[in-house]
Image 1 (cartoon, rainbow, N blue to C red):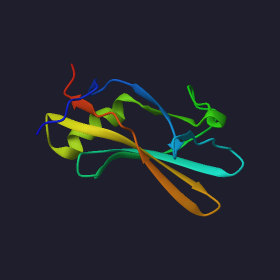
Image 2: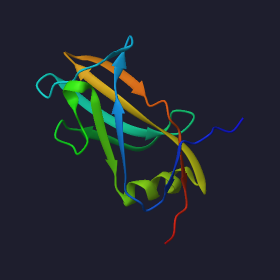
Image 3: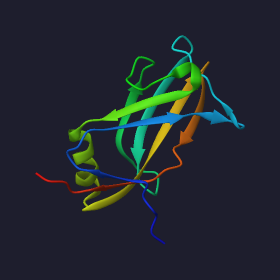
Length: 120
């Protein structure tokens, strides 16, 4: 069954994701002093297509005390998603991993995105 994409991303376009992390129904606050945050773009099987990227509390759109992580992909990254997959269309999801005191926690963004060939 095909997935319903929440947004279409065209190859070569820059795009930004802001993801709010929650744990047990509550906001999961982050701290630049204690947390290392990485993110990547995966396909429906969990294969990493872009990244991993290091996320910072100073990234545009980030609000770590309120659990918001921001990930920006430039046009080169979005073009690579289809090149690596060898397809003209690719359903993708953003994943975030937080390491705190040596313990890792991972989140998958609930929305799916469709990457398709854009204008050259």
